[in-house]
Image (cartoon, rainbow, N blue to C red; front, side):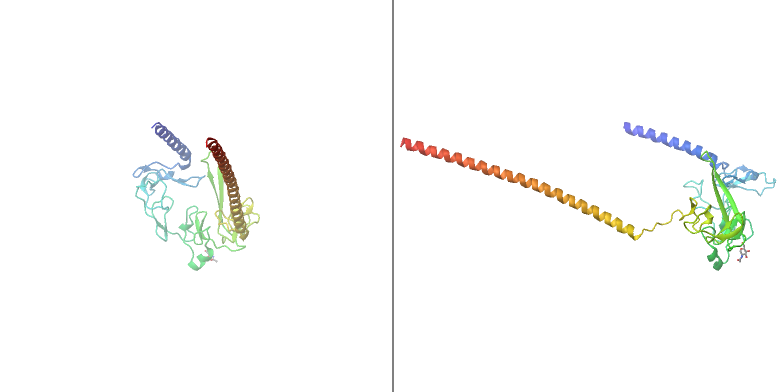
Length: 317
Ligand SMILES: *[C@@H]1O[C@H](CO)[C@@H](O)[C@H](O)[C@H]1NC(C)=O
């Protein structure tokens, strides 16, 4: 009972500590509004955080701030979101009704006000939301598509385009640095995106021209310079999460080591068993000899007693 009480108290303290840490850790990061559905908000305060590039509104995570108001965009209301991007969107509870996902050919914008038809080349799009842009025809999309665009379409500097620039052609660069201040120190993550054909080409930020991307093991400065899109310690490396393939000699060595250790174990067990058997055999032999000598001395005693009896008998006769 005592142990139970103690553990309950400790669990409660741990939970409190965890919640406190969570609150302190996320407060400066989220900085999202807390106004719920139906509340009044100011669309003028809707902006993109300059360091994290997250869309900030005065409304909470389940609503967006309407801006189509007569009062010159200064008064809006927080309305429930009309769509979601993720299967499990942030801010919704287990039992909350979720807004719908968007169908093919439409997308859910960052503020979630409702699904919109995808935009053509040259139209506006939101940061790093390539799927808001209409891809080229299928036969071209197959050539242009890579994991750095959406079916060949890409959103650079808030404009939709296709990632179709070829070797030596001029290219467009979107240079965004995401700063994370949640850990106290500022951690920057610079992401450069471009409209050269990936993964074979990259856009040099100085020349603004497409150059061939480098192969594994070649020197690099930025991820985009590598075909693998991973520049680790100034050398193009396999992307994180690459499946490692084992060489045949890895298998041979592994099998040999397993076989040798199994053989050694078996040999040792056999030797120990033989020693134990030998010891037992010796014990049994000693026991046998002891019994034999005991028997012989008993016989001798008997014989002596019998001869003595015979001697006495002849004396009385
Ligand atoms: C390349 O993409 C742009 C749109 O970003 C398009 O206008 C242009 O026609 C394309 N060029 C080729 C050769 O497909």
